[in-house]
Image 1 (tube, one colour):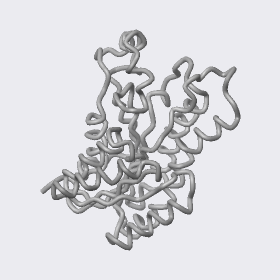
Image 2 (cartoon, helix red, strand yellow):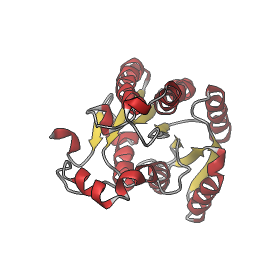
Image 3 (tube, helix red, strand yellow):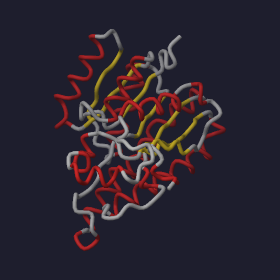
Image 4 (cartoon, helix red, strand yellow):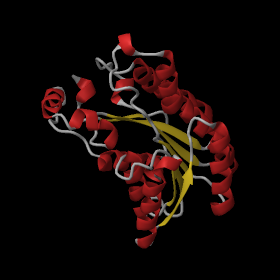
Length: 257
């Protein structure tokens, strides 16, 4: 049997088409999950293409528009998922934003800071609140919050809102893990390093900058979305039945030196 056979999974931030959310959706679907891929309306074309591709391969997938900063939209996605599929087994809180490219404090604004916090951190709170009532009824569920290596160590010239949001995600994950463990719900976090995604193009497209960054990564290369997806697959599956509040760091060794 496939590792996520008949599990219903909501995955946020799947609208880039090639980023971590879309790749997680593909990996989960290939392992038997019923995938609900979410994104914002401006990503409709990518979401439609993702769902069409998955269904053409014989997988089960639907899409839903979701602004992760709006709790009423979270409630709608959760309700629609339950209506269509009868349950919610997995939530991957993947949606995120890097914030302004110029991350120096001198250029940071309160509006920028609040926006990044809302997208990267508060959205995870909204997601947990939206899906846990159904998971409690089932006495089962797995929630995976995508944080960042920036939640463990500090990078220069990264927007302050990004660092704060990822550090906040780290402790939000642990707090939720403790509170929901006895209700049958496992909450864990993934901490990606430099991953080759559309969001990281600012770093990976500049050869000089990339080579400078690679000097600090012991494995000597950029990670892939597939490597993040496989980590998420483990945490979503029953193989991780005794894993809660974990910090699964997928960074090529970036945070250990």
